[in-house]
Length: 113
Image (cartoon, rainbow, N blue to C red; front, side):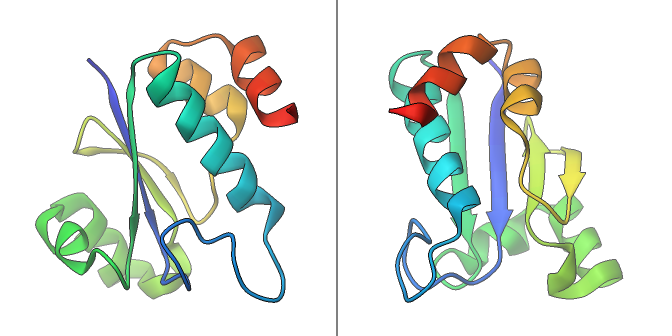
């Protein structure tokens, strides 16, 4: 089963949707992740640099990006624990659907609610 992991920069809370200016992209990613996990039964996780530093240390591919680009390389999206599929930006709904083999229409509908 495919597993998609997003390694994010340090955020103020586990979802990253708090604080004075909420990033709409983080709200979208949170909604997509909930849909992918609950409705589609796929594995999708987010790792926050401040809350989950060991996850960054354990993943050699993510370590390499951090060595080359620093925190400007975050977020890093990794498929199946070792294949980097996107660096420096959050994946689009289309990319997530393609990588995990799920319906784009269902993902899009879940983010519009």
